Image (cartoon, rainbow, N blue to C red; front, side):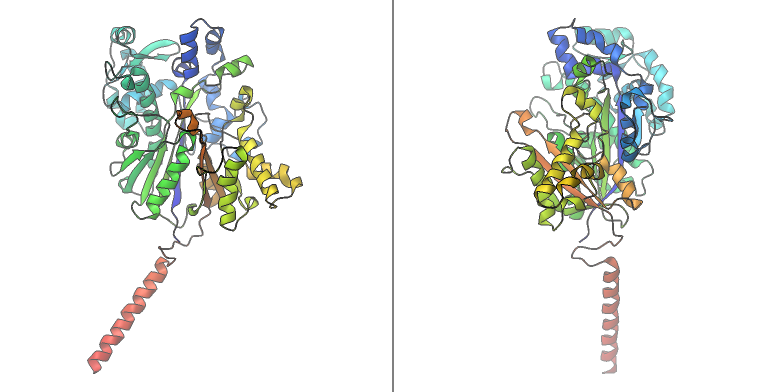
Length: 514
């Protein structure tokens, strides 16, 4: 059986300190309820500098400058010490500063909704011209507008301000006078997810060894809804991202599943490739402004920096089998069905144990599991604990219960089969997919045989069902033998054709002799 492969992965972070204050829902609600609250007064002094964000070990791991193993051996607290030699740019992508990101939001804006002040544009234009991936798009920045126009839009016409170091430097306008779905708040949110998604998608193109025109389909799997009053959530971020990033040969669609969205998207991408419908499918997701500073009160309450200060984004290219990159085992899929149950044990039983047992495998045979990969320093102060480690313990306990692991081996199992979390708490961003970039490299280096991506989602948040959701995918090292459907290799096909031609030639020769 010929399986599709994980060909390439890209990861981007955007440090957005002012957006934490003005666009994170925790802060927005606090401002509405008590604009003079002590929490709001304390935020600015608890925001990290850009240098601290770049030097943060989990962030360096996310963009590929550190391996998860190196992160595991880095002493905590991670936020207290910058990684030596930390770099903005990594193997998988980059950590972009806020001012450049505002410029990218303007570049991806095709309805003139983003206004940036003239002097700000003059100051940031040189940075965009120097950016390897964005220099050809600098013309889209324009020359900026007068501050008076921005102030009028914000103060009189319902626009959302854009701030740099606490100073108003631009805004995002509403797209309709009456339609709340096209309000400035939602336009800013959607332009931010589009801009960060575009940046991640452009890193897929960088150094790509196939013509980008061969990428025929894009699946966007963030958590934002794009649409107007007559079709809320109609989309299509996928094509809007592809348009700016340069995937001119692709069509596509948005796919939503709360935190489980990326795993659903990967399975659908793999299915489209395996069917032969498309040779290459891009899965992409931008970051969520709503979740900036989501646990800020807990962080400040413990005198920590506000650690949710970055938008996250990723892009993963799923391709036909090339004999090199890791294969997606489309026959080993874990499904949390409607009847599965919502307890943590029931969820992991459906997503991990059952698909492996059904395929004659055991939990200890999987080298690494990648569940909810949130950075523990973000979640622990808020009372949620070390989420990845909790998942590894439950997976190990399932193996013990199934007789696949001795109880005394459980502590070692957690360390050997898991990684520390290194992704921002952006819902869909940490849900399984952060492992892909590192996993591709480790498999190609012969250091990893397989890993399992585990996506989980809280469907009850939409108030339509109390059900939980989840889906998992097994990824394995490529054997190097590319097979056609039905288990016949290309080499075998060539031999069969040659034999058939030889037999036909012998047949014709016999006829001539007759």
